Length: 323
Image (tube, rainbow, N blue to C red; front, top):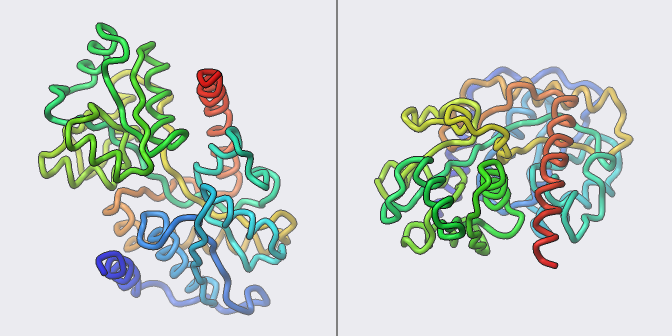
């Protein structure tokens, strides 16, 4: 009930906007966006509010379908195998960059099976600690980990989840040994952090901020380039001298490879226009998401390639540890 209300409220907040553009030959019927996550989550909400504004620009309804499973690969495969006519889009994200370099391999290549429309939103991670750990700042983590290798534990939403990979990048950058405690999802991981059974976590910022404000967690640092508006006193890792830990949760749109260039251009323009809507931007920011500054197809491709290149050595190290 609460999730349904949240989505409905998100959509109603965007009813005021520019009138729909005059309809051209494309699109002449409704479009679909396939999302690999379930209803009510951050990705689903982002897809729906962006879809509504894109529909206004395109003069057609844009329908969001949730098709979960295989770390979004089921939704991705369905789009990759659909007609390259611009009517079916896939909400791609950092999960696809992870899938590209770790097993089992997805049934498609994220860089060649699709044509990018553009990046849409990104959400940083917030490094948090349980109050009972005694950790109040980043130096406390580093000092303890150096003095007692492996003693500091960090939770994640699962092996190869963003919360795991950011922890690995951080540990590697500092030359410290942290003990990874994987869970089946973010909520389970957060439960044990709140209970004091795990010391720290690079948590999704949208989940962590309310708990920080309630005093249940200590905010240590944020992985974004700039400080978060809701936590202006919390420094970024960059400010603390730790760079390269910018593996944020990001989402964007792609269509099947071979889609005509004029149609991808029209979709990209509609998406970029939608992302400039002030109500949309405020709504997403209030949920811990930031609209991507450069949402061009070229920038989206570059971002995916950058994440894959960054993750390859980290995941290779993880695989070697299993042997």
